[in-house]
Image 1 (spheres, rainbow, N blue to C red):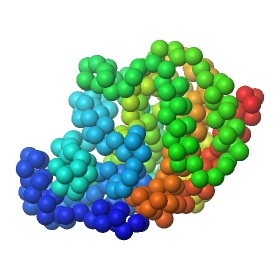
Image 2: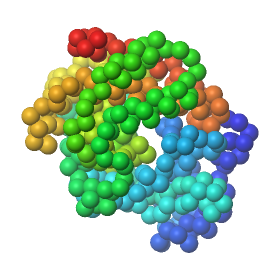
Image 3: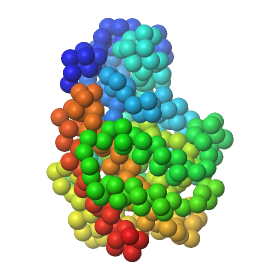
Image 4: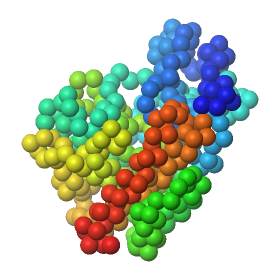
Length: 352
């Protein structure tokens, strides 16, 4: 980490505690702010105070892409979803950017939940039945999210409705080019295919999470019960198949030290790991849909977007602005792997 970024990463706990006592109801006596391990986007801290435990999520230090690290959007969407069937933590306070913030950057404070984040998609410590129920809980929460009435929860202005995939393709292509460090032929082929096969907008609009996957959720300590969906930084008004396609696309990736997919593992009811066709059918059943035309586009797009995201993480690692620079620098090796899986999927489906 650069000297400037390292200095910015240090928290003035006295100033932070005094600020929170003024702005978070019931907050008393900050004792410690400890950074959680894992995650690359926005640094997250466990706050231990005399009044209990809280979680703080902040922008990372350093120079950032304009459209990235929008923690205020995370706060807004989770606060709005509080009364709905979508499980989210309680929101307590959003601090502004700059000099008004006790840490010099935007952050928010939310409820601390006692539970598990399941980082390994193989779920090796669970029985096959528990694995199935865990993934099915993700499916149920995603269907509930896409059924939320955005106007009723005050999120009708949370994004531009319509032409979601065209806009997202433009955004992530731009971000990818801004953070590009080397030429990846499969990534270039994928970008070209997506540009030439963009589906016409069907008018479907809902709230989408933007990074919907297993390790962005909190589960009960011992049961396959979903307590909260986390990491809403990329949420917006968009197309529901963006979340579904992304989750299924992620599972097509192989499981390895560098990539945490399940594409090279047995996926069946016997193992409890989700079968893509059955998972999509369960989602459609919950939402009253008969099927999803053009499915391979949604998966390919999601793999492209994921590759663009991890390329950005890699570039931040090189620049010294990542939450965990060494892990971030390893992520760049995954970009060609993700692009290759996308190309192979299109070839297998006869789309390329």
